[in-house]
Structure formats: structure tokens, C-alpha cells
Amino acid sequence: MQAAKPILYSYFRSSCSWRVRIALVLKGINYETVPIDLIKDGGQQLAIIEYLEETRPTPRLLPQDPKKRASVRMISDLIAGGIQPLQNLSVLKQVGEQNQLPWAQKVISSGFKALEQILQSTAGKYCVGDEVSMADLCLVPQVANAERYKVDLSPYPTINRINKTLLALEAFQVTHPCRQPDTPAELRA
Amino acid sequence: MQAAKPILYSYFRSSCSWRVRIALVLKGINYETVPIDLIKDGGQQLAIIEYLEETRPTPRLLPQDPKKRASVRMISDLIAGGIQPLQNLSVLKQVGEQNQLPWAQKVISSGFKALEQILQSTAGKYCVGDEVSMADLCLVPQVANAERYKVDLSPYPTINRINKTLLALEAFQVTHPCRQPDTPAELRA
Image (cartoon, rainbow over all chains, first blue to last red; front, side, top):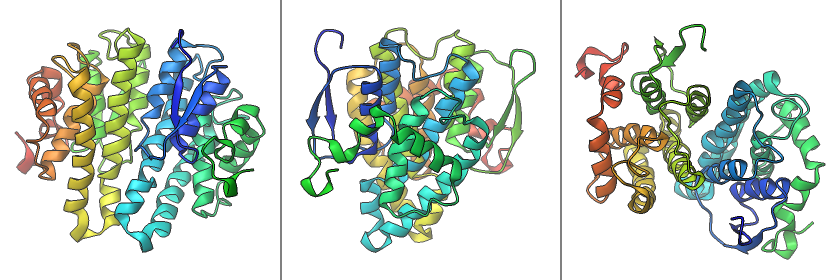
């Protein structure tokens, strides 16, 4: 990793890939993107983010205080383990075409309800206090998924506010699905 | 946490609770169980395990080597983020009663197929090498869920072997769902 330029096997639309792209940009790691037209399950990319944190500690994506670190991981796991796996493409396929939209809306809304409540006690400018953390890397891609499935976001003012603040940061913009090598022309922005 | 005896809000059957019980016993932490008849989503309890690891580093549940740590976290996330959330009670309820068993079998089998392949390159005596890690805390409760949903485990010899080895250890036995304060009499062993 220190020697060769790392390769990220990435899919422009995958919220899991996006999380990792943000971490790479925040850590200032110059990486190569190899687009793969394949959706992988679940929250496994958190292992990549934790690995990056351990091998490239600056800037930190986990707070120094163990209790705040636990808050960051709880929020990250809620999104990457409790919401995203229930609305990814392989699950939606299994649910059947006509049930996809209501299914995705239901699992995202019920996850966001829990998330909004947690954020009301942990958030500062960002998910946990005033420093960007792994939790923020998970939040923005998940809100993009929610918008894609037309979830009504008005009941989640804290999620909305943090998401907007984060989307103003460069690391979240340059890694956005609408600006990836494999983004189709009609989805570019 | 150092001062007061910690309380674990636990449900005897929940694989998420079981993972944390094993970590507490391995760390030698005397805790109080408060049974709650409620199933919480997802892999959030990994945040508790990471917190325990940071505040009580001995015995370690994550290897020292960053690449091995990444393997442990990848396996843990595959189980806690890629398998368990797809077969927990709230999802099964949403799937509808007659579809529950085939749904659970399908998501567990497809997760175990990926897991078996990963373990074939990472496993020693346990999931990653010869030391018990967070990955093992995730494995055993998930295999118990597979058995509960009558998943055919014969295609997964590595999963089977590691699970049996782990179930011989005291920390996995005393924390077993069949021996919890809220285990109903007919399920005790």
C-alpha cells in the first residue's frame, strides 16, 4: 500500500464504493479507479476504512476519545449494517420488481428514524461533534440512496442539515457518483 | 465502565447479543444481564466490541498486524453487515410468513458461500490464524442462526470445522443462547 498506487475496484453508484472514495481523498491517497459493473453486498468496505485509518492516521476519521469512537462506529454500523444491506440491489431483486420501491422506502425510513434520534444527541457540525468522521462517510452515500428511492426526508432535519454541510466539502464532491469514470453520460453533473 | 459493573441489555436468542457476551467473557469483564424481549437490527453491536477492545486491550480480539486486522473486520462485517441484517426478525416479518424460511435460507447460504471462500485463505485454527478474534465472535452466533433456519451446512467445511472448534471453548459455551437468564425452559441445555 505504501509502495504501489492502490487500486480501488469501484462502481460509480455503489454507496459502499463512495464511502471508501471519500476516505481515500480525505487521507490524501492517490489511487487508481478500476470500474467494475458489479454490486457487492453489505458493509464490508468499513474494513477498508478502518485499515486506512490504522495505516494512514492523518487526518483521523475516528475521534481520539473511546466513547466518541464508539458513537462513530455505532452510526456507521447502523447505516452500513442496518440500512444499506436491506436496500441493496441483490435484496431488491429478491423482493420482486413491484415491491422494490415500497420495500426500499420502508427500510430506509425506519433506519433514518433511529439515525435521526441518535444524531440529535451526537451531532455538532457533523455526525459526531465538529470533525468529519467515518460516520459522515457513511451518511452522505446513504442519503443519496434515499433520494434515489424517493424517500420523504422532511422528518429527518438533522440528517438533512449534516448531509448538506458535508456535500459542500471537496472530498464529498470529487467522489460523488455523478463524477466517476464509469458514470454514464446521462447521469453526469 | 471501569467504575460501575456494566449492564448488557440482552436477548437470549439474538446473535448480536451473543457476540457481545462472548467478548465480555473473553475480556474477563463481570457484567450484569438485563434481558429485553426486543430484537434490534443489524450489526451495531460491533461498535461495543471495538469499544471493549480499545478500553480493555487484553486479551486482544483484533490481531496486531493491520492486514490481519482488515481480514478480521472484513469477515465480521460480512457476517454482521452482509448476512445477519438480511435474516433478522424484522426483515422476516416484512417478507411475509410463507416466504420466511426460503428467504432466510437463501441469504444465509449465499453469504456462507462467500464466507467459506474467504476463510479458506485466512483461517488457521480459527477464522484468521490461530487466535480467537472478533470474526469468531460473529461466526458462531451466525452458524447457530443457520441451524435454526435449517440451512444445509455440508457445502461449508471450513465454517463447520471452525464453528466446532470454537464451541469447545468456555467463552462460547457460557454465553450460548441455551444458557441465558431469559432462555425459556424448553430451550435450555
